[in-house]
Length: 117
Image (cartoon, rainbow, N blue to C red; front, side, top):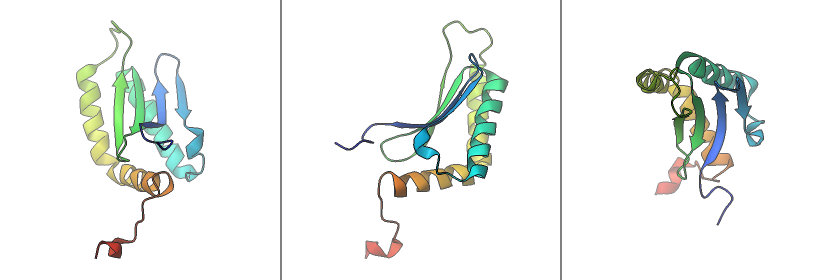
């Protein structure tokens, strides 16, 4: 069993505590990527409320997970889902790059495309 058999959190923002979290394992990411992530997450929870977490699943795919405190009247569930779809399109390059980074550095995948033969 490796360290990353389950899920690993990349970052998250919490509208209740007005906090942003970046997993220290990802400190090595370029600053502009970290800035973009922070802005994306903070604006997200500012718009729809709740808690947004970006999580890698066991395949190295980056997933948006949204939770809200029970009976939070401010949380916009439908707006939340629409915004995620919008971000997944607008930020496709960023998310793709983050998935690649994870697969190489955390899952140790070989990206030599010729190795298929």
